[in-house]
Image (cartoon, rainbow, N blue to C red; front, side, top):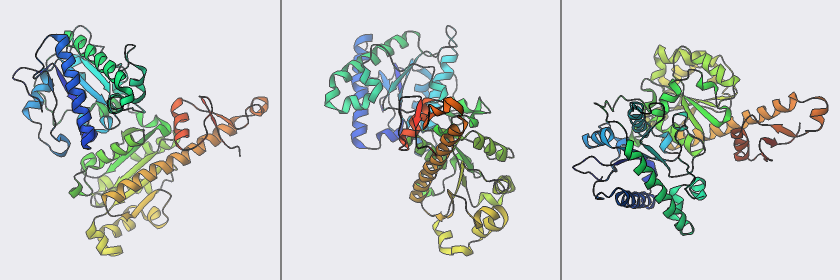
Length: 423
Protein backbone atom coordinates (compact mmCIF):
# COMPACT_ATOMS: atom_id res chain seq x y z
CA UNK A 1 0.00 0.00 0.00
CA UNK A 2 1.23 3.46 -0.90
CA UNK A 3 0.35 6.11 1.69
CA UNK A 4 1.24 9.78 1.61
CA UNK A 5 1.11 12.38 4.38
CA UNK A 6 -0.97 14.42 1.94
CA UNK A 7 -4.09 13.26 0.12
CA UNK A 8 -3.20 11.24 -3.02
CA UNK A 9 -4.35 12.45 -6.43
CA UNK A 10 -6.00 9.16 -7.41
CA UNK A 11 -7.40 6.08 -5.70
CA UNK A 12 -7.00 2.72 -7.46
CA UNK A 13 -10.11 0.54 -7.11
CA UNK A 14 -9.54 -3.04 -8.27
CA UNK A 15 -10.68 -6.61 -7.66
CA UNK A 16 -8.36 -8.61 -5.40
CA UNK A 17 -9.15 -11.72 -7.44
CA UNK A 18 -7.30 -10.09 -10.34
CA UNK A 19 -4.07 -10.21 -8.32
CA UNK A 20 -4.30 -13.69 -6.78
CA UNK A 21 -1.86 -14.99 -9.40
CA UNK A 22 1.59 -13.50 -8.76
CA UNK A 23 2.39 -12.59 -12.41
CA UNK A 24 -0.97 -10.77 -12.63
CA UNK A 25 -0.16 -8.88 -9.42
CA UNK A 26 3.17 -7.80 -10.90
CA UNK A 27 1.39 -6.66 -14.08
CA UNK A 28 -1.02 -4.48 -12.13
CA UNK A 29 1.67 -2.95 -9.93
CA UNK A 30 3.81 -2.15 -12.99
CA UNK A 31 0.84 -0.48 -14.68
CA UNK A 32 0.12 1.65 -11.62
CA UNK A 33 3.77 2.66 -11.32
CA UNK A 34 3.92 3.56 -15.02
CA UNK A 35 0.66 5.47 -14.76
CA UNK A 36 1.69 7.40 -11.64
CA UNK A 37 4.98 8.41 -13.29
CA UNK A 38 3.15 9.88 -16.28
CA UNK A 39 0.59 11.66 -14.08
CA UNK A 40 3.33 13.14 -11.90
CA UNK A 41 5.17 14.53 -14.93
CA UNK A 42 1.99 16.00 -16.43
CA UNK A 43 0.93 17.61 -13.13
CA UNK A 44 4.48 18.66 -12.16
CA UNK A 45 4.19 17.06 -8.72
CA UNK A 46 6.34 14.49 -6.87
CA UNK A 47 5.48 10.91 -7.73
CA UNK A 48 5.73 9.73 -4.12
CA UNK A 49 2.27 9.41 -2.61
CA UNK A 50 0.46 10.43 -5.79
CA UNK A 51 -1.81 7.38 -5.67
CA UNK A 52 -3.47 5.08 -3.14
CA UNK A 53 -3.29 1.35 -3.85
CA UNK A 54 -4.40 -0.97 -1.04
CA UNK A 55 -2.89 -4.44 -1.27
CA UNK A 56 -4.64 -5.79 1.82
CA UNK A 57 -7.29 -8.47 1.33
CA UNK A 58 -10.39 -6.53 2.33
CA UNK A 59 -12.67 -9.23 0.96
CA UNK A 60 -11.46 -11.72 3.58
CA UNK A 61 -11.98 -9.37 6.52
CA UNK A 62 -14.60 -7.06 7.95
CA UNK A 63 -12.62 -4.06 9.15
CA UNK A 64 -12.25 -1.07 6.85
CA UNK A 65 -9.00 0.53 7.91
CA UNK A 66 -8.77 4.26 8.47
CA UNK A 67 -6.20 4.78 5.69
CA UNK A 68 -8.55 3.39 3.08
CA UNK A 69 -11.49 5.38 4.42
CA UNK A 70 -9.55 8.64 4.36
CA UNK A 71 -8.31 8.00 0.82
CA UNK A 72 -11.82 7.19 -0.40
CA UNK A 73 -13.12 10.41 1.13
CA UNK A 74 -10.42 12.74 -0.15
CA UNK A 75 -8.72 11.64 -3.38
CA UNK A 76 -9.56 13.84 -6.37
CA UNK A 77 -9.92 10.95 -8.85
CA UNK A 78 -11.18 7.39 -8.64
CA UNK A 79 -9.40 5.06 -11.08
CA UNK A 80 -11.49 1.91 -11.47
CA UNK A 81 -9.97 -1.17 -13.09
CA UNK A 82 -12.81 -2.88 -14.95
CA UNK A 83 -12.75 -6.68 -15.20
CA UNK A 84 -15.28 -9.50 -14.81
CA UNK A 85 -14.09 -9.91 -11.22
CA UNK A 86 -14.47 -6.19 -10.54
CA UNK A 87 -18.19 -6.31 -11.29
CA UNK A 88 -18.69 -9.41 -9.14
CA UNK A 89 -16.98 -7.95 -6.07
CA UNK A 90 -19.26 -6.35 -3.51
CA UNK A 91 -16.30 -4.44 -2.05
CA UNK A 92 -15.48 -2.91 -5.43
CA UNK A 93 -19.16 -2.01 -5.75
CA UNK A 94 -18.95 -0.17 -2.41
CA UNK A 95 -15.88 1.80 -3.53
CA UNK A 96 -17.55 2.64 -6.82
CA UNK A 97 -20.68 3.82 -4.99
CA UNK A 98 -18.56 6.20 -2.89
CA UNK A 99 -17.20 7.70 -6.12
CA UNK A 100 -20.72 8.01 -7.57
CA UNK A 101 -22.03 9.68 -4.41
CA UNK A 102 -19.15 12.15 -4.34
CA UNK A 103 -19.62 12.90 -8.05
CA UNK A 104 -23.36 13.46 -7.54
CA UNK A 105 -22.57 16.12 -4.95
CA UNK A 106 -20.74 18.17 -7.60
CA UNK A 107 -22.71 21.39 -7.92
CA UNK A 108 -21.38 22.07 -11.42
CA UNK A 109 -22.37 18.80 -13.10
CA UNK A 110 -24.48 16.70 -10.73
CA UNK A 111 -25.98 14.66 -13.58
CA UNK A 112 -22.63 13.69 -15.11
CA UNK A 113 -20.19 11.65 -13.06
CA UNK A 114 -16.91 13.55 -12.82
CA UNK A 115 -13.66 12.54 -11.21
CA UNK A 116 -14.05 8.87 -12.20
CA UNK A 117 -11.56 7.42 -14.72
CA UNK A 118 -12.50 3.87 -15.69
CA UNK A 119 -9.77 1.64 -17.09
CA UNK A 120 -10.51 -1.55 -19.01
CA UNK A 121 -8.12 -3.86 -17.20
CA UNK A 122 -9.55 -7.06 -18.69
CA UNK A 123 -12.16 -7.47 -21.40
CA UNK A 124 -15.71 -7.50 -20.04
CA UNK A 125 -18.69 -9.04 -21.83
CA UNK A 126 -21.28 -6.94 -20.00
CA UNK A 127 -21.30 -3.85 -17.77
CA UNK A 128 -23.69 -3.09 -14.91
CA UNK A 129 -26.20 -0.28 -15.59
CA UNK A 130 -24.54 1.89 -12.94
CA UNK A 131 -21.36 2.26 -15.03
CA UNK A 132 -22.76 2.40 -18.55
CA UNK A 133 -22.92 6.22 -18.59
CA UNK A 134 -19.20 6.56 -17.82
CA UNK A 135 -17.09 6.31 -20.96
CA UNK A 136 -13.99 4.13 -20.73
CA UNK A 137 -13.16 4.28 -24.45
CA UNK A 138 -11.66 7.38 -26.06
CA UNK A 139 -10.72 8.21 -29.63
CA UNK A 140 -7.11 8.82 -28.62
CA UNK A 141 -6.67 5.28 -27.26
CA UNK A 142 -5.32 2.53 -29.52
CA UNK A 143 -8.13 0.24 -30.77
CA UNK A 144 -6.43 -2.76 -29.16
CA UNK A 145 -7.18 -1.25 -25.73
CA UNK A 146 -10.93 -1.82 -26.13
CA UNK A 147 -10.35 -5.23 -27.69
CA UNK A 148 -8.16 -6.86 -25.03
CA UNK A 149 -7.71 -4.50 -22.06
CA UNK A 150 -4.62 -3.00 -20.44
CA UNK A 151 -3.35 -6.22 -18.86
CA UNK A 152 -3.00 -7.90 -22.25
CA UNK A 153 -1.35 -4.80 -23.72
CA UNK A 154 1.18 -4.96 -20.89
CA UNK A 155 1.83 -8.70 -20.80
CA UNK A 156 2.19 -9.32 -24.56
CA UNK A 157 5.25 -7.83 -26.24
CA UNK A 158 3.41 -7.44 -29.54
CA UNK A 159 1.31 -4.73 -27.87
CA UNK A 160 4.17 -2.78 -26.26
CA UNK A 161 3.59 0.37 -28.32
CA UNK A 162 -0.17 0.23 -27.73
CA UNK A 163 0.45 -0.12 -23.99
CA UNK A 164 2.49 3.09 -23.91
CA UNK A 165 -0.25 4.93 -25.82
CA UNK A 166 -2.96 3.59 -23.48
CA UNK A 167 -1.04 4.65 -20.35
CA UNK A 168 -0.53 8.09 -21.86
CA UNK A 169 -4.25 8.42 -22.62
CA UNK A 170 -5.30 7.27 -19.14
CA UNK A 171 -2.83 9.66 -17.53
CA UNK A 172 -4.29 12.52 -19.58
CA UNK A 173 -7.78 11.56 -18.40
CA UNK A 174 -6.64 11.59 -14.75
CA UNK A 175 -5.09 15.04 -15.13
CA UNK A 176 -8.28 16.41 -16.69
CA UNK A 177 -10.45 14.76 -14.02
CA UNK A 178 -8.28 16.12 -11.22
CA UNK A 179 -8.99 19.73 -12.29
CA UNK A 180 -12.63 19.48 -11.24
CA UNK A 181 -12.18 16.42 -9.08
CA UNK A 182 -14.52 14.53 -6.79
CA UNK A 183 -16.02 16.57 -3.98
CA UNK A 184 -14.89 15.63 -0.48
CA UNK A 185 -17.04 13.11 1.37
CA UNK A 186 -18.23 13.37 4.94
CA UNK A 187 -18.18 10.48 7.37
CA UNK A 188 -18.39 7.16 5.53
CA UNK A 189 -20.20 4.18 6.99
CA UNK A 190 -18.29 1.78 4.78
CA UNK A 191 -19.64 -1.33 6.45
CA UNK A 192 -23.20 -0.45 5.51
CA UNK A 193 -22.82 1.52 2.30
CA UNK A 194 -24.57 -0.34 -0.54
CA UNK A 195 -22.71 -1.78 -3.51
CA UNK A 196 -23.23 0.11 -6.77
CA UNK A 197 -24.01 -3.23 -8.39
CA UNK A 198 -26.89 -3.76 -5.94
CA UNK A 199 -28.11 -0.16 -6.20
CA UNK A 200 -28.68 -0.44 -9.92
CA UNK A 201 -30.95 -3.42 -9.26
CA UNK A 202 -32.79 -1.86 -6.32
CA UNK A 203 -33.70 1.16 -8.44
CA UNK A 204 -35.74 -1.06 -10.76
CA UNK A 205 -38.16 -3.48 -9.02
CA UNK A 206 -38.77 -5.25 -12.34
CA UNK A 207 -35.10 -5.74 -13.20
CA UNK A 208 -35.34 -9.50 -12.55
CA UNK A 209 -37.49 -9.71 -15.68
CA UNK A 210 -34.73 -8.29 -17.89
CA UNK A 211 -31.69 -9.81 -19.54
CA UNK A 212 -33.00 -13.18 -20.71
CA UNK A 213 -30.17 -15.72 -21.06
CA UNK A 214 -27.52 -12.99 -20.83
CA UNK A 215 -28.11 -12.87 -17.06
CA UNK A 216 -28.54 -15.18 -14.07
CA UNK A 217 -30.66 -14.45 -11.00
CA UNK A 218 -29.79 -16.01 -7.64
CA UNK A 219 -31.87 -16.61 -4.52
CA UNK A 220 -30.01 -17.15 -1.22
CA UNK A 221 -32.41 -19.02 1.03
CA UNK A 222 -30.48 -18.49 4.22
CA UNK A 223 -30.67 -16.36 7.36
CA UNK A 224 -27.36 -14.79 6.34
CA UNK A 225 -28.35 -14.20 2.72
CA UNK A 226 -25.48 -13.10 0.49
CA UNK A 227 -23.02 -13.55 3.39
CA UNK A 228 -23.85 -17.20 4.06
CA UNK A 229 -20.74 -19.41 3.93
CA UNK A 230 -21.78 -23.02 3.23
CA UNK A 231 -18.18 -24.13 3.85
CA UNK A 232 -16.68 -21.64 6.37
CA UNK A 233 -13.21 -23.14 6.11
CA UNK A 234 -13.07 -21.86 2.51
CA UNK A 235 -14.01 -18.33 3.65
CA UNK A 236 -16.15 -17.76 0.58
CA UNK A 237 -19.67 -16.36 0.78
CA UNK A 238 -22.43 -17.77 -1.38
CA UNK A 239 -22.95 -14.32 -2.91
CA UNK A 240 -19.30 -13.85 -3.85
CA UNK A 241 -19.27 -17.31 -5.41
CA UNK A 242 -22.42 -16.61 -7.44
CA UNK A 243 -21.08 -13.27 -8.64
CA UNK A 244 -17.73 -14.80 -9.57
CA UNK A 245 -19.33 -17.58 -11.62
CA UNK A 246 -21.57 -15.06 -13.37
CA UNK A 247 -18.54 -12.99 -14.28
CA UNK A 248 -16.59 -16.02 -15.50
CA UNK A 249 -19.51 -16.90 -17.80
CA UNK A 250 -19.82 -13.31 -19.01
CA UNK A 251 -23.30 -12.92 -17.51
CA UNK A 252 -25.01 -10.15 -15.60
CA UNK A 253 -25.69 -10.98 -11.97
CA UNK A 254 -28.79 -10.23 -9.91
CA UNK A 255 -30.04 -11.29 -6.51
CA UNK A 256 -33.73 -11.96 -5.80
CA UNK A 257 -34.67 -11.61 -2.15
CA UNK A 258 -36.20 -14.63 -0.47
CA UNK A 259 -39.53 -13.34 0.86
CA UNK A 260 -43.28 -13.80 0.38
CA UNK A 261 -43.07 -12.48 -3.21
CA UNK A 262 -40.53 -15.08 -4.30
CA UNK A 263 -42.92 -17.47 -6.08
CA UNK A 264 -44.38 -14.67 -8.19
CA UNK A 265 -40.94 -13.32 -9.10
CA UNK A 266 -39.80 -16.79 -10.12
CA UNK A 267 -42.82 -17.06 -12.43
CA UNK A 268 -41.83 -13.72 -13.96
CA UNK A 269 -38.25 -14.86 -14.54
CA UNK A 270 -39.68 -17.92 -16.31
CA UNK A 271 -41.92 -15.79 -18.52
CA UNK A 272 -38.90 -13.72 -19.50
CA UNK A 273 -36.45 -16.64 -19.91
CA UNK A 274 -34.05 -15.53 -17.16
CA UNK A 275 -31.98 -18.41 -15.69
CA UNK A 276 -32.45 -18.54 -11.91
CA UNK A 277 -30.60 -20.54 -9.26
CA UNK A 278 -31.90 -21.11 -5.72
CA UNK A 279 -29.42 -22.03 -2.97
CA UNK A 280 -30.98 -23.63 0.11
CA UNK A 281 -29.38 -23.58 3.55
CA UNK A 282 -30.57 -26.76 5.36
CA UNK A 283 -30.50 -25.04 8.76
CA UNK A 284 -32.42 -21.95 7.59
CA UNK A 285 -35.09 -24.00 5.82
CA UNK A 286 -36.47 -24.95 9.24
CA UNK A 287 -37.49 -21.31 9.72
CA UNK A 288 -40.91 -20.41 8.38
CA UNK A 289 -39.53 -17.27 6.71
CA UNK A 290 -37.32 -19.41 4.49
CA UNK A 291 -39.14 -22.73 4.43
CA UNK A 292 -42.45 -21.28 3.27
CA UNK A 293 -41.13 -19.70 0.04
CA UNK A 294 -39.50 -23.03 -0.80
CA UNK A 295 -42.77 -24.87 -0.13
CA UNK A 296 -44.44 -22.58 -2.65
CA UNK A 297 -41.63 -23.22 -5.09
CA UNK A 298 -42.18 -26.95 -4.64
CA UNK A 299 -45.59 -26.55 -6.32
CA UNK A 300 -44.12 -24.84 -9.38
CA UNK A 301 -42.49 -26.36 -12.43
CA UNK A 302 -40.26 -23.72 -13.99
CA UNK A 303 -37.94 -24.54 -16.86
CA UNK A 304 -35.60 -21.68 -15.99
CA UNK A 305 -34.97 -22.62 -12.35
CA UNK A 306 -32.48 -24.86 -10.61
CA UNK A 307 -32.03 -25.55 -6.89
CA UNK A 308 -28.89 -26.58 -5.03
CA UNK A 309 -28.53 -27.54 -1.36
CA UNK A 310 -24.97 -27.83 0.01
CA UNK A 311 -24.27 -30.17 2.95
CA UNK A 312 -21.35 -30.56 5.34
CA UNK A 313 -19.24 -33.60 6.14
CA UNK A 314 -21.22 -34.29 9.31
CA UNK A 315 -24.44 -34.54 7.33
CA UNK A 316 -22.73 -36.78 4.79
CA UNK A 317 -21.66 -39.19 7.52
CA UNK A 318 -25.27 -39.45 8.77
CA UNK A 319 -26.49 -40.40 5.32
CA UNK A 320 -30.23 -40.41 4.68
CA UNK A 321 -30.95 -40.42 8.42
CA UNK A 322 -29.77 -36.82 8.80
CA UNK A 323 -32.58 -34.83 10.47
CA UNK A 324 -32.11 -31.77 8.23
CA UNK A 325 -32.39 -33.93 5.10
CA UNK A 326 -35.50 -35.69 6.42
CA UNK A 327 -37.08 -32.33 7.24
CA UNK A 328 -36.36 -31.02 3.74
CA UNK A 329 -37.96 -34.13 2.23
CA UNK A 330 -41.01 -34.30 4.48
CA UNK A 331 -41.79 -30.66 5.31
CA UNK A 332 -40.37 -28.42 2.61
CA UNK A 333 -40.00 -29.90 -0.87
CA UNK A 334 -41.91 -33.17 -0.84
CA UNK A 335 -42.49 -33.29 -4.60
CA UNK A 336 -39.18 -32.11 -6.01
CA UNK A 337 -37.04 -34.23 -3.68
CA UNK A 338 -38.93 -37.40 -4.68
CA UNK A 339 -38.82 -36.70 -8.41
CA UNK A 340 -36.05 -34.11 -8.92
CA UNK A 341 -36.45 -31.86 -11.97
CA UNK A 342 -33.36 -31.18 -14.09
CA UNK A 343 -30.70 -28.99 -12.45
CA UNK A 344 -31.85 -29.74 -8.90
CA UNK A 345 -29.12 -31.05 -6.56
CA UNK A 346 -30.77 -32.02 -3.29
CA UNK A 347 -28.26 -34.43 -1.78
CA UNK A 348 -25.13 -34.48 -3.92
CA UNK A 349 -23.10 -31.45 -2.81
CA UNK A 350 -20.68 -31.92 0.10
CA UNK A 351 -17.81 -29.53 -0.66
CA UNK A 352 -17.10 -26.06 -2.01
CA UNK A 353 -15.71 -27.59 -5.21
CA UNK A 354 -18.91 -29.62 -5.70
CA UNK A 355 -20.97 -26.50 -5.17
CA UNK A 356 -19.07 -24.38 -7.68
CA UNK A 357 -18.93 -27.04 -10.38
CA UNK A 358 -22.62 -27.93 -10.10
CA UNK A 359 -23.68 -24.27 -9.97
CA UNK A 360 -21.82 -23.57 -13.18
CA UNK A 361 -23.21 -26.70 -14.81
CA UNK A 362 -26.78 -25.85 -13.80
CA UNK A 363 -26.52 -22.34 -15.23
CA UNK A 364 -25.11 -23.57 -18.53
CA UNK A 365 -27.74 -26.32 -18.83
CA UNK A 366 -30.60 -23.92 -18.09
CA UNK A 367 -29.32 -21.36 -20.58
CA UNK A 368 -29.08 -24.01 -23.28
CA UNK A 369 -32.63 -25.23 -22.65
CA UNK A 370 -34.01 -21.70 -22.66
CA UNK A 371 -32.13 -20.77 -25.80
CA UNK A 372 -33.46 -23.82 -27.58
CA UNK A 373 -36.98 -22.84 -26.60
CA UNK A 374 -36.45 -19.23 -27.67
CA UNK A 375 -35.24 -20.40 -31.06
CA UNK A 376 -38.15 -22.83 -31.36
CA UNK A 377 -40.68 -20.12 -30.46
CA UNK A 378 -39.17 -17.74 -33.01
CA UNK A 379 -39.51 -20.41 -35.70
CA UNK A 380 -43.14 -21.08 -34.89
CA UNK A 381 -44.03 -17.39 -35.26
CA UNK A 382 -43.07 -17.26 -38.95
CA UNK A 383 -45.73 -17.97 -41.58
CA UNK A 384 -46.58 -17.44 -45.22
CA UNK A 385 -44.19 -16.09 -47.82
CA UNK A 386 -41.99 -14.36 -45.25
CA UNK A 387 -41.43 -17.60 -43.45
CA UNK A 388 -40.73 -19.44 -46.65
CA UNK A 389 -37.86 -17.10 -47.45
CA UNK A 390 -36.29 -17.36 -43.99
CA UNK A 391 -36.31 -21.07 -43.29
CA UNK A 392 -33.82 -21.83 -40.54
CA UNK A 393 -32.98 -18.18 -39.96
CA UNK A 394 -34.08 -16.97 -36.54
CA UNK A 395 -34.33 -13.40 -35.35
CA UNK A 396 -32.50 -12.49 -32.16
CA UNK A 397 -33.96 -9.75 -29.99
CA UNK A 398 -30.52 -8.29 -29.27
CA UNK A 399 -26.83 -8.86 -29.76
CA UNK A 400 -26.58 -10.49 -26.33
CA UNK A 401 -28.73 -13.37 -27.53
CA UNK A 402 -26.56 -13.76 -30.62
CA UNK A 403 -23.40 -13.82 -28.51
CA UNK A 404 -24.94 -16.32 -26.08
CA UNK A 405 -25.86 -18.60 -28.97
CA UNK A 406 -22.28 -18.51 -30.22
CA UNK A 407 -20.96 -19.30 -26.74
CA UNK A 408 -23.23 -22.32 -26.59
CA UNK A 409 -21.96 -23.65 -29.91
CA UNK A 410 -24.90 -22.64 -32.08
CA UNK A 411 -23.76 -21.36 -35.47
CA UNK A 412 -24.11 -17.60 -35.78
CA UNK A 413 -24.62 -15.72 -39.02
CA UNK A 414 -24.44 -11.98 -39.46
CA UNK A 415 -26.01 -10.20 -36.48
CA UNK A 416 -28.80 -9.93 -35.55
CA UNK A 417 -29.65 -13.35 -37.00
CA UNK A 418 -29.05 -16.74 -35.50
CA UNK A 419 -28.94 -19.76 -37.78
CA UNK A 420 -29.93 -23.09 -36.36
CA UNK A 421 -31.49 -26.38 -37.36
CA UNK A 422 -35.16 -26.36 -38.34
CA UNK A 423 -37.66 -28.63 -36.69
